[in-house]
Length: 550
Image (cartoon, rainbow, N blue to C red; front, side, top):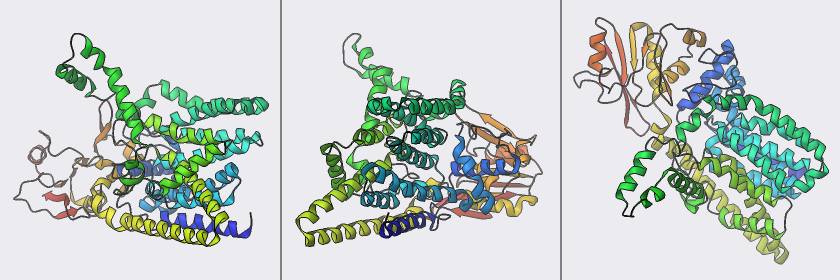
């Protein structure tokens, strides 16, 4: 590489780091409960060698009962060890691997197309991608899996020149499987399809292929035992189309409303037809212009809203890039096309937040690569015909890209946190700060679970001693078929203050003479009691009211 390319690449990587690093403790506006769980379990491993359940160096973290995969938790330990158990300590890890993904993408694209400029275009597009920025400024396992996949595919492609790289590729690809659930399907099937598509190349290097296959298989053995135990499917059951608790009721309703004669309603309306329709619809939803270029994903944590997962100006260059791939009969065209087509397949079997930006993030680099190919070939075509037109086109393209990015990033930094702080469980930290300041004043601290998992925010923001927590004889958990809630530990109690038997009056009557601190939502307490503190969401709406009974 010449000095210009190296300089530009360094600037792009530094820029991508800056975009992910700037105000990362403040935007997103709060840690969500998964980030808090990842951070606290990493802290627990750091301090005790055990997770929050007291299990020594686990391969899977039970957490809320969904069994988080291990790589993100263990990778978070250095950041927390250096910067402490706080937002920055948790989020510095994704900031780093987010920027590294931008760097690795350059080398992958250079290997694919033997072009430094396509590599620079692709890396710059990933650096400013709303899809990628959103999920590398918070601690999301999918973004780390994306890093491992990009690294693994780079090594795979290098392996077609030197098959020793196939062996090396198995390590990051195996790590992707231990990082995020989508990769548990994507990575093995992707490798299988690549082996089928490029079987002629593989036959020439069968020894290296078999060694690679053996290494990957050995690395998957611990996961296989976990899946066979049933615990490995816990997360899937939470979000699966097939495990939807309302599925049978809806099918019976459709049969009852059907005007078809005889046995036809049963043939038309059944579990197979319902699931097939849902899966196909979910899959195709990820290829719509609305998802890709206009509105993006509906989940407020996963997307900034009011903008597509990709910038609108990328659309024509995506088409040009795909056209080039197939017109030039590029050797790796099918490897590249398989990448997104397979990514959305496991996502299609889930039933919430469709289309889903988080579970499909692995596909994001593909779109930047193809856009980069389209951009480069468009500029080459223009330059061959007219030098002035080339410079004018480059200026216009740069102006559009910069303006679009500035509008997006301004929205992300200043508008998005205000509108969607509730979706990020904002207010829990502020409530726990009151607990920390007044812990010794009260005999009982009651924290409503209305917004979900207050115990984890309490553990995290009080930096509660992990050993003291998992050894606490008062620790009480309530397990349902798909989730685990902590009800009590220490002097803390986490009810839903709106439920019968656990309302304010019920708790007061059951604890006569005790000094009690209550943290609940507006409406949980009698209007005659004046809160000692109120916590608002960033848009001014009320989040918590804090009262005391002395």
